[in-house]
Each structure stands twice: as C-alpha cells, then as structure tokens.
Image 1: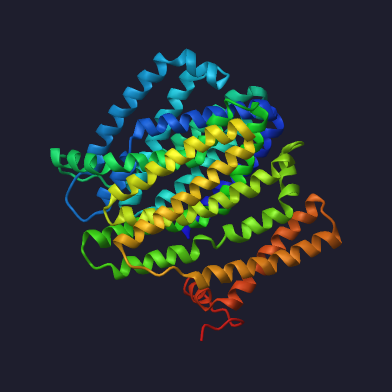
Image 2: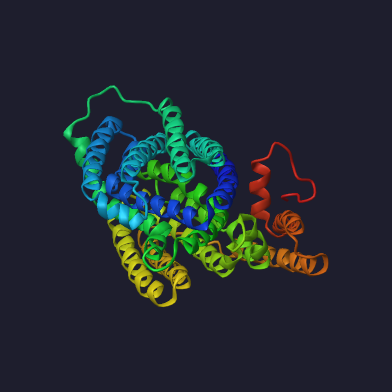
Amino acid sequence: MVHFLSRLVMSFSGFVATIVLTRTLGQTRYGTYVVVLSVLSWVAMAGQFGLPGAIRKRVSEENDGNYVVSGVVVQFALYTIVAICLWITRPYLNDFMGIAATWILILMLGVRLALTFVRTVLDGQHLVHVSSVLSPLEWTSRSIVQVALVLSGFGIAGAFAGYVTGAVVATVIGAYFISIPERTPTREEFRRLKAYAQFSWLGSIKGRTFMSMDTIILAAFVPHGLIAVYEVAWNLASLFAIFGESISRTLFPEMSMIASEDKGEDQISGLLRVSLAYSGLFIIPGLVGAAIVGDVVLTIYGQGFETGYYILLVLTFARLLYGFMGQFLSTINALDRPDLTFYINGIFVAVNLGLNVVLTWRFGWYGAAAATTISAGAGLLLGYYYATRVIEFEVPVDEIAKQCLSAVVMAVTVFTARYVVGDSLPVVVMLVGIGAGIYFATLLALSREFRLTVEENLPFRLPLFPSE
C-alpha cells in the first residue's frame, strides 16, 4: 500500500509537470526531451547489465554475503565503460537525439544508476516501503525544479536539470537507510552476482523494450511532435498499471526468502494467486474509462493531444497484458529460475523489436502500439506456461471476472451521464470520480475476497458489506 500510494503521488507530480512541459515547450521540443530520456533508458540497460535483479535476489536471501559493496564495485565499473563509449560516439548520438546533449546524458546516466542501485538494495533488504517513498521524492523534486526553470525561460535545459536534481535528492535520502554488512566481500559474492545477472540482464532489456522500444523506433519514422502525443498516452496507460507493479515489487522479496529457506511452495502459490487477483484491480476499469472519456482527458495536455485517443486504448490494453505477465515472471525469478525467464525475455525482445520495426515502418504509431501489445500477449502466454512448470497455482478467474463486471457497471453509468450532461473537461473530471466510486462499490458488493482484503487493511469495519 505504501508503494502504491507513493506511486500515486509520483504520478500526480509528474502529471502536473508534464502539462507544464507540453504547454510551455510545445510538442516538438517536448518530443525531443522524450527521445533523450528514451536513449537514456537504453544506455542505462548497458550500464546495469542485469545487476539490479541479481542484487535484489541475493540481498533478499538469508545468507551472510556482502552484496552491497560488491554490487557498488561492479556498478561503478559498468558505468565507467558505458560513459566512455557514449563520449566516443557523441556525434552520432547528438544527431539521433536532435540536440547536442551527450554530456548531460552521461550525467543523467550516473544519477539514474545510483538511484536504481539504492532502490534495489532497499528492496532486497525488505524495505520496499522505504524504497517506494523515494519515487515521489524524486518526481516531486524533479517536477518542482522543472516547472520553476521551464517557466523561467530555461527551456529544455531546465527539464534536464530537474531530472538530475530529483535523482540526486532521492539517492541521498535512500542511501541513509541502507544497511551495509561489515564483512569484506569475497569472490563468492561476485560469482553469485554474475551467476544470476547472466540471465537477468535480458529481463532488464525486456522491461526497457516494453517501455520505450516503440519510442526509439518512432524517432526514426515520425516527427517529434507525434512522439510527444504517444508518450503522453503511454504515461496515462502506465498510471493505471501502478497497483499491479506495487504488488509484484512487494511480493518478490517475500517469495525469494521463502524459496531460499525451502519452506514449501504452498505459500508462494498463494502469493501468486493474490498477485494475479489484484493485478488488474485498477487497470481493468482504467481501460474501460479510457474508452469512454479518454479523448477529453487528453486535451488537458494541450491542443492536438486528443489525436492519441486510440493509441491510449491500445497501450492501456498492452499494460494490462504486461501486468499479468510480470506476476508470472516475478514468481519464476523468486524461485531462482532465471534461466526460464531468460528464454521468455529473449522471445519477447525479439518479437517486440521485429514487430516494432516492421509495423512502425508500415503503419506509423498505430503499428508501434500494436507491436507493443502483441509482444505483451506473447510474453503473457509464455510466462503462464513456464510458471505452471515450476509451481502449481490457481488462476483466480472468478475475481478477475468480478472486476470486469464492475467495470461494465461503471461504464454504463458514466457513458449515460456523459451523453446526458455533456463532455466538457470539468464534467468529465467529475465523471471520472463518480465512475471510480461506482466501480469499487460494485466490486465490494460482488466480491467477498475483496471485502475481506479491504477490511483487513482498514482501521474500521465496513458495515454495509459484512464479510460473513
């Protein structure tokens, strides 16, 4: 819950900053900023090479190893290598990004890797609630600086400065809570990090492929203005997926610890069922809501952004599929089978890359959105198949069906209200709140499991929906 609420705060601050950036910088310059961030995301993969997943797994296990210090050594070495490569290739990078920003890219890479390392260690030390707070701290700090500098006339340079500031603030605060073992790391720690990272690196690429492969490919085929619209639609779709990500991130260290202590698979199977039951809790109604009022919501970002309506729908569905896929892969990794996820991720990356190039070249941004969705569907099927090979579990079809039914009730109400009352932006904002209330009220009435979950996490009972 702490992670989820933290992501909500983060999303709100980012939402406000994005509105300011799109309206102040314009579609083209904001699109350039998005392209630079996409390049940063990809070079960060090279600067990590599966290390965060390996550190999270090894730190979460019950042993006496010092994976904090050994992780710092490896991370610094990787950053140095990548930074040198970026500087050597700066003429080509600047030309691709459309701005001479390689030096700031290297600086942003350093603070990004540092923050990722701090979050990873905190997650492994079962301090997910602490690492989760770093996200709103980072984004709030970033947003404040970006808004202040951009409105003061610093333009895209102010956007970059805000990114660096936010990462530095969160890194410093997060590092304070890390516990560093006193023992000196041995070759065994480095060997075990390598043993896991040699498989998990493709998982990092898989995640980055899903998050920004389409943006990178789009940069070669469409103007930066359209990329800005596409990125806004992606950010809205990602907002609905926050709760599923919170579940996956929170349960992984618990599953990993249970698996390392050989306590049996029943507990892990139960946790997987819970993660599947609640992965779509927000994104299912989010998809339905986007279909009803998404065109109006996009106008918040400025004139022309409503053209991303259909892109929003496709990307939200892709996030839904990817969210369920993530629960399966997280469980497989917790069971220390990175070899299986390596295979799944390899197919995912190949499908995503191939389809993005072909479909984007042929159909533009609709092709990019379709490629992202198809690859997510393929990954979901593979994740389910291999999860069934390593653990027995039950897919909570009934709970997912109740969420879908509640979303339908919400949809009928909101659609009727929009038709009767109108579709001005203030009205739509009000309808979003009403729709959310109807969805959760309906789900509380339909699902006893959801009522129990709510009651167990509230300091008071809900007399309208007794659990018995």
